[in-house]
Length: 547
Image 1: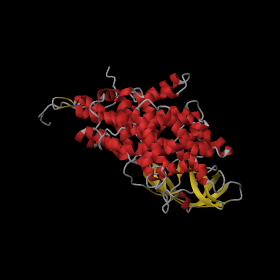
Image 2: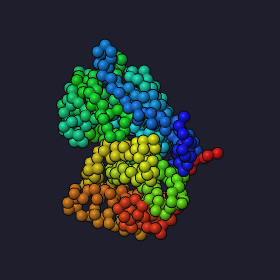
Image 3: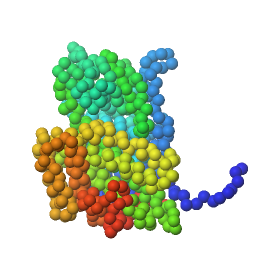
Image 4: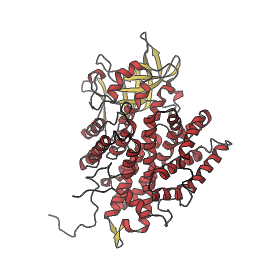
């Protein structure tokens, strides 16, 4: 028996047993703002139920287990037959099953579907982010498949199903399926037009055999994949099922799983096609145009997923500071710590409000909103995903050495944080996409300016930032080298305008003073001390019901 040398005191209770949705004022207010009142009660109930599950000790245990027991590749069975299967820990299937059942692959066919799904995605991925990859790709495959009504009729009901069935079987024998994507290759990476995978037409219309490889193919146990390959008519989009209708396995040789910085629960693979059967999606030579809507939808998930990581990190930091004492009082009562927490809370709320505004634009689906999304999505993807790593790193520091220990969960958040900035196009890709939209689609800039203009006159710092942005856009000399600067300002102005319109005055005031007015340092915790920082922190605090 160990000797008792001291009494353990001043330890912070785990942040569990709370409603992740209900405890997030910025998110719950966004849902109320963007949904029709007729469906709001139902949506609130769904999200609160999901929030309670996400905040449970059970869900957090599943998240830890799925990351501590990463997927394993089995290329052959005991007899030497090629099977190319990936084994996941049961916790992965529990997380994924709960998400699918909650409708996190179902947005395109129900009223307010994108807002409801984005809010649910933001809530549930706070428990574990890795399984968000197949959720996102399954959701995003729908608009690409709709370019072929015959394919959509078969696959869309399965993609949007609330039933999760693991295992490889013909899609027609399952009540729900998951999708993946294969675009990048070794020699080209983001430059998908340099892809070398070949597609040879078969006698049957729309059917091809693929030969080549994919350097990054996430969630390889999915039921189907949208991939790009060079057909006789040029780069084309194809649907590759894992299992063919006659129940035989398609040729889908998994070479290895990536050993990644984070995202450990999710399998990212390299795959080889060698006479792999595929069905053309869209026209030959229009592969990028066909798959671009899928890319745009996954980019929005990068924004929402980063907002989720930020929110969980900030919630953990504020929770810790609420319960931990140092230097004669609670950390949260110390002016310097309060400044840091308020600064982090601003970044989190701005990301949440922007992500939900983009989801609402998808639901509206008007010409004006589609034009707005053309610029707003890549700008938001660029900025929000880049801020994520900085926010999570600073939040971890708020816990001190405790935050550096795996048991706190903070290291997993930090390893996950850079992913969304890389996935679906890194920072330069997003910045160049914004330039392309500015040059080719003038309606997109008009729509963005109308959006930010709705807050014009409400804050002089926002007005000044809008003027500075217009000055930047008026000068096209050396524009590519200035692309990141322009996109950063665009995203900040958009966030500022949304907060001025919808956030409490103390939040909007602090954001505009720091991010737009220049009264800010180079690190978190450098907000003007005259602001109402206590109210900003209080708003972001996750309240755990201890009754």
